[in-house]
Length: 192
Ligand code: ADP
Image 1 (tube, protein in one colour):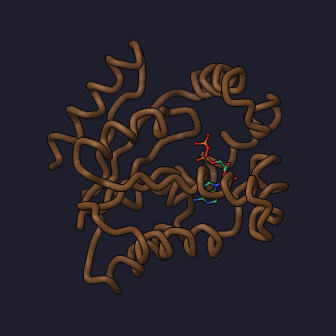
Image 2: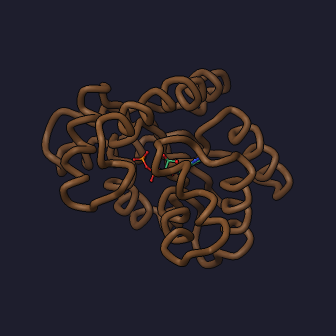
């Protein structure tokens, strides 16, 4: 099995490009954000607990998302691997992922990082808000909190993965969606 991480700040285009990558390499795309929103929609206890944190632009506890990922690895069959989107988001989650994979006799193949500057994060999220209506896309303050959270908790993962050569970065701008997509796919192709 091949395990990839799709990394980048909110609004970098992870969700947008994940489908094309997953299809091309027969990977299961797993977005922890999507899984959490599904829990909220279904009104589960986990969803209720996560909602206030997500709506405020904060991270949910590491154990919550780690459990979701492990559950997905255990139950999803018929694919050649997994494309993780929005996980890991903390060093603790990255260390857990390494342990979860090692216990399965597997390891992470690569981190595919899509980079955009903070100004673009605002622009992209504002645009998405008008289409998807997510509560955590709704105000400047919440978006600012997510960018702060990204820089303080998630960005340190870049050095974590650079250390052992697993980190590969591609620009998520400028250009049209198609131009960005082809740049991302070309980069993934170079890893395969
Ligand atoms: P975006 O890429 O726009 O930040 P996501 O859908 O990936 O959106 O995540 C939405 C929210 O879900 C995050 O702001 C956070 O509250 C929660 N979340 C998603 N993944 C994780 C994770 N790995 N660890 C902690 N919280 C997470």
